[in-house]
Length: 408
Image 1 (cartoon, rainbow, N blue to C red):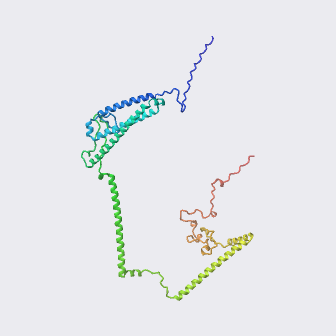
Image 2 (spheres, helix red, strand yellow):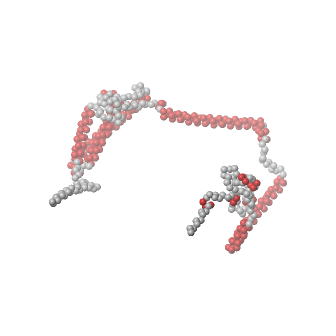
Image 3 (cartoon, one colour):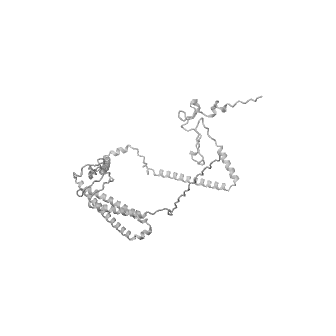
């Protein structure tokens, strides 16, 4: 039997992807700017009718404000009698004006995006509309400024009344929530605190008072010290007047030399001796400087080989100089390499001699004490390594491995 031919799979039509490029309008773009303008115009007319109806009767919208309280309908009489309700009404009026401003800005933004052809057709109508919006904005701004000025005046009057201590203003809380909504939270009424009862001012006054007290105390201490000084001075003057001070001074040894002029001839002879010694000392120093200069000039004129030979001979003399012997465990002090040509006795001392803190002969001490820093935390364990055997026979390098025997 012949096999049936299998149907070929149908090819799906390929969808071409739409690409959007920057600065180019898509092909299927629909401009619905005209319809939006008509909608905005209808909304503006509805808002104007709504505003006219609200101006006829003073009513507030049932809308929640930021404070969490719900506004209720209030008559014209209540508004005129209660200053707080009048302030609440002005705040809602300012909020409504701001909403109208936002709508105008949105419409202005839509008008700017309208095509150029439609702008040319409705130029006169739009000019009249913009003029009308400007007039409304100026009127609303004027009303807002008047409301703010009235509110400031009322706040000033309220502060003055609260300072007088009115009983009606001194209540702790008041409620503005309606009977229908009992779940709205209560807000605390702001209470005016007189200047004399404010904590910040009282604290500043207390700190200032403490500073004044410290300053006053310091002045009193200075005055007390001054009085004590005056009393001591008066006491010393009284003792000097009575002769008691001379007796006290006689107990001290006066070291001032007041023997000048007793023997003028002997003083003159002593002065001559001092002057001759000074002249002799100056002459010897001058001769030594001249000899040193002559030696420098002589060595500069010598050849290099002769100068090197003299240096070696001088070094040999210094090396063969007799040195002192160090005692057992004596500390070594290096005398330094500078100022070795000075004639002072300080630089000619034997630095190999033991100091006063060291033991002169440690050989006479017991063997356990023949270590450095005995009895201190930094004492040494060994006397010297030449006399101690520190070999550890357990270490691997002390036991060499046995030689392997060759197999026969």
